[in-house]
Length: 290
Image (tube, rainbow, N blue to C red; front, side, top):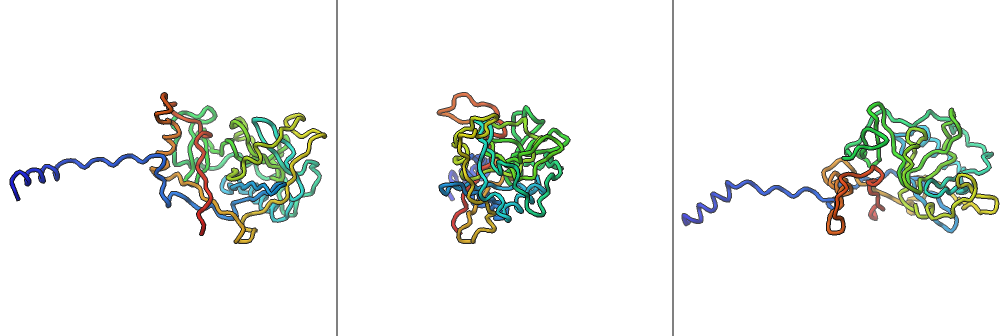
C-alpha cells in the first residue's frame, strides 16, 4: 500500500464515528405500532350509517369497562340517542329518559375509578402540567397525569367519560360522553374516563348544538339516533375494524413528542418550549389489511 494511502486509512480508522442522527417525529417503524385488541374496541353506529369507534381503557377503569361490555352485548344502547351536545365541551349519549333498566350484571355504581394505582407513563412532557405535577404517555398510548400520590387519564379531545349524578353516584357507563372541545381538565379525578374515540369523531363534534341548559336538546330539536353499539369482537370477523396505536416506549416516539413541543421552521419561527398533554395525543391508525 502506498505510504500516503496507508496514513489516510489509519487516520480514517482512528477518527471517531459520526454520531447517528437523532430520530425524528416521522421515523416510526412497523414494530412501533401495536394492535388494539378487538374486545377493546366499541363500535357505535349512528343514523345514516355513521360509525364511531371507541378504544376502551380496561386497565384504568376495569369495572366501568366491564359494564360497557355487558351493555354492548345486551344491545342496550340500540335505539337510544345522542341527546346532549354542548359547544366546546361534550357530546353525550344514552337513554334520555333515564328509565331504561340496566341489563343483568351491570354494576349501577362501580368504585370511583377516577384514579389509577400507578403512574405508568414512559414519556414525560417537558412543560409542567397546570393540573398535575407531571404528565406523559403510557407504553400503549394513553395520556396520563400524576400529582405524586395517584395517577389518572386526562380529559383531552375525543376522550370518553362516564356521565353520573351527584356523588356518591359514579355512573354505570350507560350514559357516556366524548370531549368535543378544549380539554376540560378540571373534570380529571372527578369522573371515570373509559376510552377514546379513534375514528368517526367528526360525527360527534359536528352535531347541532343543543339549545337547552348545558347543551341538552330542547323539545323542538331532534336527537341523533343510535342504531347499534357492539364490541368489535362480537362483529363478524370479515366486517370488524382493526386499529393500531403508536407505542410510546421507544426513542422514535420521544422524538415525536419533542416535535409536538417544538414545531420546526420554516413555518414556526418561535418554538413553544413545551406542549400540553392534550396537544400530543398518541397517534392511532387503521391496521393494514391482514
